[in-house]
Image (cartoon, rainbow, N blue to C red):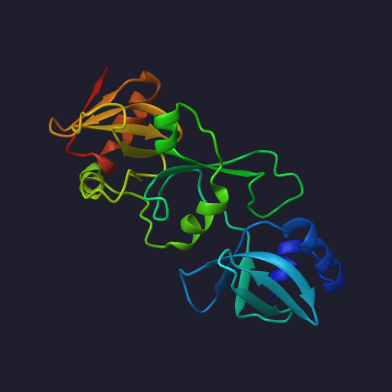
Length: 232
């Protein structure tokens, strides 16, 4: 059985692995998990190695120490799916995109992972900021995140006023209408594209970009089974 640092660096020698840990993972986001506690992870960043111990720190400032020969704790590179998420920190729909230029940094960082606020896009017309640092922990640690919720469930969440947008699947999400006073309308996103809107009372999805029409029709049974679909 390999130690976590061997798996992260592809090296058997501890001194070589320590140098490689700094090169690959300093200032990036990793996940720490106890192998005996399933479905719970903590986001950490690698700090340093001293006296046979690897030191990590969480975004909240908590320090974690792992001995080089520890087999109970695991540290690994998170690989979240690209697409739509509900951020419980920002109370809205966010979209995660990984960038191709990962370079030599192997963990997640602002240079290789982009997270945007869908509502900001609606209000400003473009994605102006990467909220990676304030959101990646929210996405990775919260195991209550659902991969799929229905539009009906989303409408209930949005109607209570706590959320501005939510994910439906990793491919689709909805936000409140911030363009006018029409409370009967939700905006429909496919990743970071606005592809149409939802008429709540009529229970109709209006697809405004025909490129996405077939995907909506093929998948809506998962998230909008009782809604009709029309092309604008």
